[in-house]
Figure 1 (cartoon, rainbow, N blue to C red):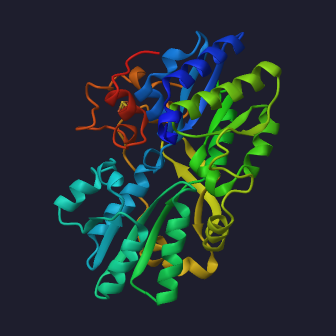
Figure 2 (figure 1 turned 90 degrees about the vertical axis):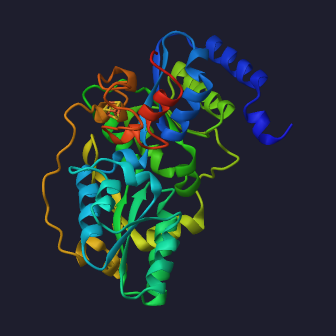
Length: 363
Ligand code: SF4
């Protein structure tokens, strides 16, 4: 049996679910942080395998979802400037800003190009010095190394027509915010395995200790997720609160040394506004001093206007695990993947898109 078949093996899934049912003695709420995990849970119906009272709630780990409307607006304004091309990942094109999405901005004449990698944007800048290419740098710690590499490459090539609209976000401050929120029900986290692959586990230890919550690095296949749930549950039942690694095939204690050092060479933590959650201290990355010349917000004078968002969208509550997507009155009615009101219905990692795609309207 190949590795993927093992990680989706019905026999292993059943055995883990049985062990979870044997272990749980009271109600607990566990949050899976990453939207990729949310999609796997919905796709494979993993919640149905859990005992009554053991609830999974969905976290903010969808970078497209937490990119603020104000940032989307800035991207649209940049793309409309003469001589500027905005290069972006495809997911961002349909995320609503105040005056529609980047798709609409392109239809109105703005220069928006979809790229597969930040390095594609550097290549576009190198090939055509007559245009300034601004890469829309959205993502978590997983994407930060690729953006950092692009900035360093642009610096090495001496490109003055390349810049980045930096919208990178960091996970640990979001966990702190969720645990400190007034409606918090989360008693343990399944941390996003790919973020831990880059950054390691050390940033999570102070959070686990301060808030008395288990934090378990977890992968994305059914066996991974149930193994993460079981590890978190065992800690909860034993009254423990440690950082634990249930994704050892990909995650090391200190992460990926080369990727981490590249990120920390090019970026430094900064405060960042998360859509639906608000300003998080240390919740993002910005370019460090030597690389600040590539910061699109410093290079272009963009007016700061208050964004307008759909009054119906409860994405902030969904992203903090306070509400489930189907509890939103607009879900599946006025908000669908074809006509999204909020980013969680757009993104491949959005919880609302997962519920819609896999037909979840309960739990
Ligand atoms: S269903 Fe749509 S409107 Fe409701 S929270 Fe999700 S994205 Fe927002």
